[in-house]
Image 1 (spheres, one colour):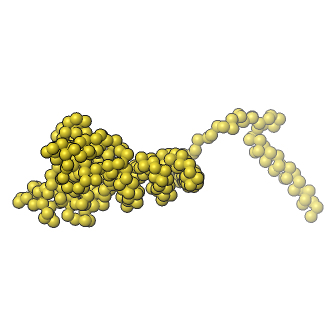
Image 2: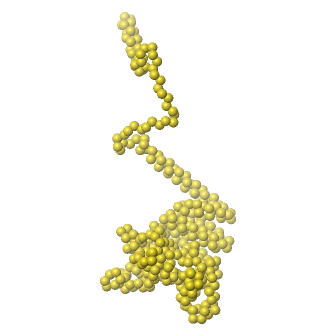
Image 3: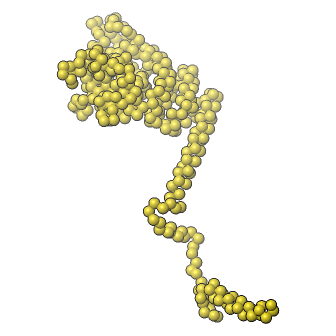
Length: 361
């Protein structure tokens, strides 16, 4: 055994010598291996080329980024929740400032139930202190924020109902706080004659229904010498297609919110700025032959028609009623805006005979 071990010793030395040469990169004996150039720590080596579609770290980066975005969104949502709690606490303590700041800060967050409740609380606080315009402003801001966030009409409805109750004091009230001018009834006057005289004098047109509503009058009876108030702010309409809702404004106050139907996907309701060019009660549907009279269930125009004009010309779109209850709240028309008959009859009376601005978003 000992002679065999002695024979293995030279072999081990030879192997060790060969491996040392291999680790030195084959450098000649007695010379130092070349030094590798220093690489700055900030330098990033390029990723190796990969066949198309092969997963790697690069494809994982978007997932990581998406995760970070979700975390940021979650953190922002939590921050908004905390902000709403702070604003609600401040509002309960008699300081509405934080609530107003929060409601203005993030219109996209206006679909949140907490935000809706906060807007209602702020409005009630303003109303309780006698600040009806401030209360209305809180609710109007909430509705406009919900429209920006594309909230459906069903979500808007509680806010709209709260604003309706407020408007009975603020707008549809001869003692309300709306901008106005006194008009005295003269012998032989009618509502239409008063409206025309006021439009000629002040350049502001109003429908007879609006003049009656703000003065809490019904019927045509007018007494000579009777003082009335006429609004100095005009009526305008904003249609929010994604929310299936239309807002009727008097100045900057939303006085009505209506559910609507819009054009089918193959017959889109156009967006843009229009004016109402004509008003027709009990319209006939002339397109088919023979025409379909008003009141016929086959007549898609319903009880009223408010036709659009754009750039001085009549276009084949407008706002109209419908005999079908299920024709509101979806994409059902050939491009026009549909309201329930009861709603279009009210809107028909609120707006003047022509010239009302309509903006479709």
